[in-house]
Amino acid sequence: MIVPAGAYDFARDLYYILSQTFTNLVFCSNILNAVGWPYWVFFLLSLIMICCVFYVRERRIKQASTKEISRQQQLIHLEMHAFQAQMDPHFIFNSLNAIHHYILTTSTDLASLYLTRFARLMRLIIRNCNKEWVNLEEDIEALELYLQLEQLRFGAQFDYELDIAPDVFQQVTFVPPLIIQPYIQEAIWRRLLLRPTKSGGCLRICINRANEMLIVRIEDNGVNQDPRADEAHLSKGISIAVARLRAINERYNMHAGITEQALYNDLKQPDGHVVIINMQQAAAREGVM
Image (cartoon, rainbow, N blue to C red; front, top):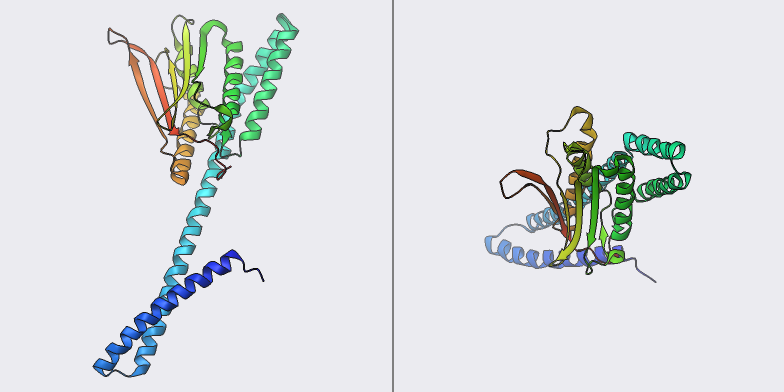
């Protein structure tokens, strides 16, 4: 007969508890004989002790289970909000409007190319919205599609560079989806598009690894300004990304963190902004996929 693993674990724990309890009971019996207490006191104390041990054990199991369920619900809630932030109605409308403009004024082939990219981006967002981990290759593909669509709308206002170190193996490196994109969106909308010359913006994304840590560096030469009221969705996307990374960090202990700082030139004048996302190298995560 095959004994279920859970039943075996329970029987083993029960045997350990009873053996320890028996040892304690023998010790208590010797004490009772020495002080002259009746045996019914001994048995009553033994029963109370056994009940207390089982009560504490079951309570700890229940608390651990409740904590894990709460953590899972929090992650699902944050993933849904991240999906909603990604499916920004303004971005969808403006992208389709730009594609429509290309159809009417320039080349239908170019419009078809960007429409295909838009459809691919929507597919990736929807497919990955309920996943805790995706491989870096898919996440980078979604980022590039997003950047290409934004460049379609804003033309020469900014260019971007994407540099991935050779020692970062994208197909076997896993990252939480919808974490990097909100910071890229913020760099474009809150800084690069606010440059007075409306040109010359540069966004550089570097991904490398150091000491088993994956490092994503997002650097721009935009202008730092206070957020406007109509940009609340950008702040919401950043807040959701931070909360999701914190929750995943707590669950998997991946030592993740995000730092931001302003950049200055040699004359101590503002010269851009940099965001650095650090997370433990996540290669071949069979245990969490």
